[in-house]
Amino acid sequence: MLNQLTISELTAKLARREVSSREATQACLDQIARVDGSIHAFISHNAADALAQADAADKEIAAGVKKPLLGVPIAVKDVLAVKGQPLNCASKILGNFISPYDATAIEKLKAAGAIIFGRCNMDEFAMGSSTENSAFGVTKNPWDVTRIPGGSSGGSAAAVAADECIASLGTDTGGSIRQPAALCGCVGLKPTYGRISRYGLVAFASSLDQIGPFTKDVRDSAILLGAMSGVDPRDSTSVPQPVPNYAAALDGNIRGLKIGLPKEYMIGGLDAEVKASVDAAVKKYQELGAEIVEISLPHTDYAVAVYYIIATAEASANLARFDGIRYCARVDGADPMELYSKTRGAGFGAEVKRRIILGTYVLSSGYYDAYYLRAQKVRTLIRNDFLKAFETVDAIVTPTTPTAAFKIGEKSDDPLQMYLSDIFTISCNLAGIPGISLPCGFTKNPKLPIGLQLLGKPFGEETMLKLAHAYEQATPWHQERATV
Ligand code: GLN
Image 1 (cartoon, rainbow, N blue to C red):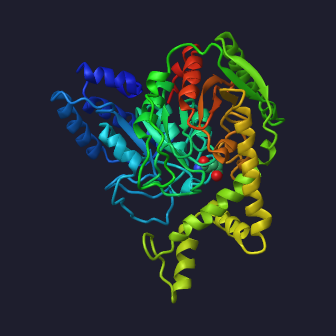
Image 2: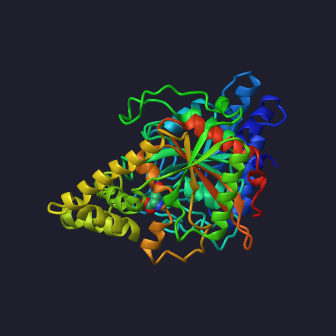
Image 3: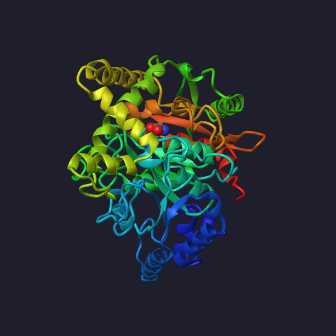
């Protein structure tokens, strides 16, 4: 079925004129019609607009135009601006907002010929690990609809896992691409901080946020990373680092590459089946000729605490703009203060309010030094741990999550338990380094995907992808499809 294809398979078929973009796009739309009632990966999608884009792509293909993503349907997390499409961040507060412009990442994908369609569900303002914090309802895991797909980019992960699109985009502030990719059995990549412009991304925590792809294999991840990377004058945190041909870097053997195994990551709460799969992956790397080196990241224990101070502090400032005056679904009041508080009280969900309160507190005078400033200092120590490790290793391997997908409702009343599900993904954002999650096995009963995380040097995506690709090609996991 066309909707099951990878980007590289579909573009090859399109180039040979074996299929049209309209047929591939229609196959995705048919799959949405068939399964999205039970998965709810999408908040909305516009079928007519998607097909019109596909027809335009087919005309270009017929005219001999060559573009790397020409005719490929790609779905988008509801936090990225796509001109003319709704933008809600899975919140009620944005009301009927329609994006007036394209995010840079979207502009680049459109220029490469992609069909940009659909608004993928997420935790409100990307705050969460389960997609249960959406004002538009919960997304279900395609491998078991009684379970969460992960979060915050749960809709984007589920849409790829359920073959409702060829690939999708998400964002990752503390694990929101890698964690749902692990739990849904797809490949999710968070680039180095500064690799992809965030212009047109609604900010959650600006010193941590990055955009990245969800794909069915590592090659597609490399393709989309290359298509979106590059410096952008509209995002001063984007870095003028040359963009390599990531897909070309995948092949070749990994003999002699050194992979670090952090001793601090084999924690108590690590599920036995997850541990067994990661151990087996480490063995596989040794068979493939890589050298495994035990490393230490001594400040790992502080990562979750540091993250929840820095991320909430930045969120409290970023979300101040939703005040009922400019973009929002306003609730009127007798004076501006009442208007603000009624609008924000009605518009934001419980988790977003919790974070704004926490973030405002850690930035308030008297507490700033004790919490925010100290967290910034520990963040530097965490980054230094990684930089020191990378003096001896080329990449680091860890589990992506401590457990496979948990049940819907299991952790939603316990924010701390929810926060701890990001224990392996958060340090990567604090350090600003790239990370990828790829399938490395399944739990037995029920059968749920398990993710392997690789972390790379700053702007070391080529080596990280090469290692991910070598493992993927030597194992069967990525070929398994969810039966929805
Ligand atoms: N789950 C983490 C949080 O709730 C990470 C979210 C993200 O990466 N956007 O903040």
